[in-house]
Structures are given as structure tokens and as C-alpha cells.
Image 1 (cartoon, rainbow, N blue to C red):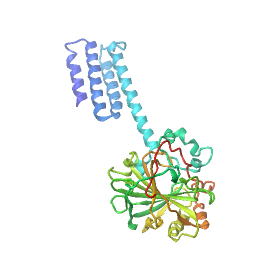
Image 2: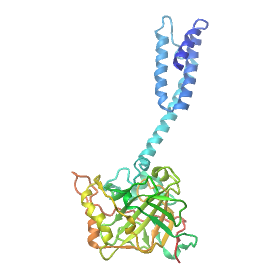
Image 3: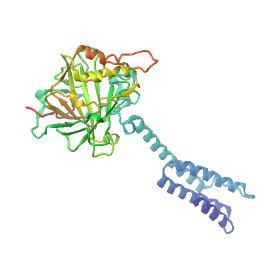
Image 4: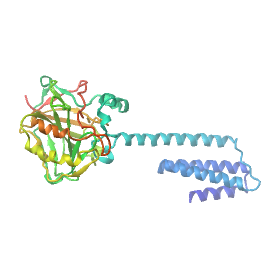
Length: 374
């Protein structure tokens, strides 16, 4: 409708003005129309406006006795402004695409790498190289860290942890190419974390593990330099935000409970998880995994250390309140071998055992580690 009015306005003014004035009016009103449309509707209307503009010029050229003054000053002003708008809008588009590429969390709700593969953790593109694609890798609150108990501050204001998990919220188990994760339904407050260092309610989204190629290493966090063969992460998001993806971009958006696994007796509570691994051997494999209570994977004592940190895999967002439990749970060497039977590679590619999928400790950079115990 606006286009028709503009065209009508232009033609009616042809009887009282010269063509130069008519052409100038056309440029002026098309420019105003473009600005309004771009402001209201966004960059898509730029392309529509280009088409409209070309059509109007063609209409002028097609009329007998009409000549377009291509060197008209007003035309050049219009083109300059027009190109500036396009440039600005393209910058916005590229920025949006970059955010989508570097933040799969908003759409997938998973703590998965953008391009999960064996190359993410193995040389030459291991964790030491992540900063080339993710500058935040050198940020002020990166995880994991080396926890030094003697330097942690006892905080009596820390409340006891309350983990309330409903086994019916367990949904599926997935090989995501850098670990395996068990996903949970998070559309209600059936499986939640409260207390400790956090305020409000956090819903359980998933849990996953990190492990090494041998029993002497594999955990992400260390305690006074001591490494464990494996570390469990239970990932929760703050319900004051509308979704997991939104929460993952906020400083208080996520809370991850870390549990160390220590070589000892076989852990029967792990067996259901380990039995499911044969069905998800390759990257991308997924199967149902219902009726599982992750609380059976927690130690008897819930004493913990806490600090402000980040995701330990790209995009390394600094949105995690870490709660690392002091007491480890047991795992046998045979059970650890089952973890290592998974593959980084998809089906059809050369098999590559999934191991050493952990990030080394990062600098503390002045952060304080608090403890719930003396």
C-alpha cells in the first residue's frame, strides 16, 4: 500500500514539477520508507526495498521522454546512506550467526561442542588451542581449577545441598562425540537442586563424565594436584530464566555438581549406565534411558567446595556456579575400561577410543574457593 501511494504521489507531481523534482521525491520517499521498514521489521526488508527501488527506476526509464540523472547529488546521498544501512545490517546478521555458531546451547540445550569430534581433545586441536576460536578460554573465571583445601575459605553461611531427583524424568543417553550424557526432562520442578551457594531453584538438565586413558588421570578438577580417573558432572539451570539456553548465558545461570570417581570396589550404582554404553558406542548414537535416579551416584557426604567458573568444553561460557563434592565415589578398573570402550568417531569412520576427554586446570585469577566444612 505504501509503495502504491508513493508511486501515485510521484506521478501526480509530474504535472506540476520537472522530472528532476519527481525523481528526487521518489528517492526521498523510498529512503524514508526503507528506514521505517528496517527499523520496524529488520534487515529482510532491505532486500524488498532494493527490489522496489529498482522497479521505480525502471518505471521512470520506461516512460517516454524521461532521462535519469545518474549523477544527481541527491541520488549519491541516497546510495551512500543505503549502503551504510546494508553494511550495518550485514554486521548484525554476521554477529547473530556467530553467536549461533558459538552457542549451540540456546537451541540444543546440551553442553555439546560445536563440532564435537576426536580432534577437539587430541593434538593439534586440543584444549590448549581452544583460545584461538574461543577467546573466553583465557577469561577471568574459567574451569576447571586445582582446589587447594588449605587455601579454601570455610563459609558457615553456605546451606546444605538439597538434591531432589525424580527417576521418571530420565529420558535418554547419548554419545555426543566427546562424552556420553544422560538427558532429563526439565519442563517442571521434579528434579532440582537447591541450597548450598545458590539462590532459588535449579533444574537438572543432564549428567556426563570426563575420564582419562589410564586410571592415574581423567578428572577435570584436581585436589592439591591429585588427579582422579573420572569426574561426574550433574548440570542444572536456574529457573529464574525461561530456558536452559537463556540461563547458560547468565553469570548465575548454571550450577554443576562435580563428583570424583576413585579406583576401588566396583560400584553397582554405575552398572545401569555402563550397560547402556554398548548401544551408543559411536558418536551420534542415542537410546532411551528411563527410570534412573542420579542421586545413587552421589557419595554419602555432601560436603563441598564452591567457586564461580565456566563450562569446561566450548563455548566455555562463564556461567557456572561449581559445587565440587569432597568425598569421591568408587569405581573399579574394569568399569573404567568400559568408559574407554566408547568411540569419538561416528559409525563408518576409523575407530578412535574416547579417552582423555578432560580439560586441564585453569588459572584461579584471584577467585575465592569456599568450603562448606572446616
